[in-house]
Amino acid sequence: MFARKSLPGPSRPTRGASGASEGGRVADSLKVRTAVGLCLIAGISGLMALDAWSGFGYGAIALCVALTGVGLWEYARMAQSAGPVATAPLVLSGVLYTAVKGLGYQLDPRLHEALPLIAVAGAYWVFFSCLSGAPSLARFRGLCATAFGFFYLPFLGGFALDVRFLDVARVGEAGFYYVITIAKGTDVFAYYFGKFLGRRKIVPSVSPGKTGAGFVGAIVGGVCITCGFAAYTSLGEFLPLALAPGVGIVMALIVVSGDLIESFIKRSAEVKDSARLLPNFGGVLDIVDSVLVAAPPVHFLLWVLIARSGA
Image 1 (cartoon, one colour):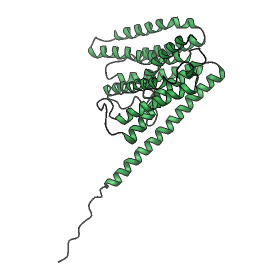
Image 2 (cartoon, rainbow, N blue to C red):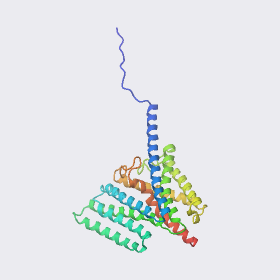
Image 3 (cartoon, helix red, strand yellow):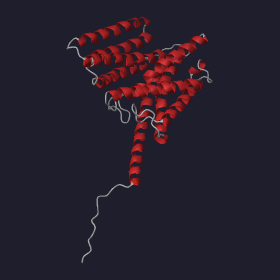
Image 4 (cartoon, helix red, strand yellow):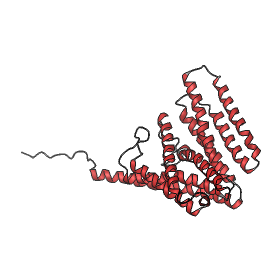
């Protein structure tokens, strides 16, 4: 009798092919992330160079105002899951607060006297907007989310402008660039350490991508970046090189916590990224999350070091 021929079954990818495919995706992700990151660095560096050349700080002011406006809009969209967020009062008061803070340094310090007025007026606008509907737990949550949004972006982010306009031995320009570099540089170190060496997750419930190796990478990056600024920029006039490694470690811990805070907000809102603005990065909020928490401690550290030096 004729022998039965076996029909070929559906082809299945081998483990090697699957691994190669996964490796290719990781490589492509790294390439895109690196390219976008370099473009961001080039753009920000260009603004800082323009400020240094012109002797004015309008580039830094424009950058902070733009990031605050877009970041608040993204935050308001995410926070809608908690309850109705007063988007217009939040965005407009936040942008105005940031702009007046920067222009107060650049034009007339008396403008800073208007900052409490802007904050209070924005709060009243939010309060009155709550009266347009019946009281509910969702509306109360939305009110709390709106208030936190103002604190998170305009208030914390405003410290970056405080750093930029420290008018002592051009330390403000170096300090502003340090805030951005320490925030995003430690992110880069953590990302690559985690991608190539990471295995053990440290906080999977908040950010599944964070690994122990990535945490070590952030520490290494923080130390290297801070030592570099202490050795080669005007920060070194106030930040001793012997103190730089300790400052770098502390700043790395702060930056990592800032990234985790934003991850907590996104997971609470059940979204992966704050927006789909940049490939492999997400939105503006995904980019500035660590800057927001890095700016205040840098400002207070420089304030103490400058006061101690008697400058």
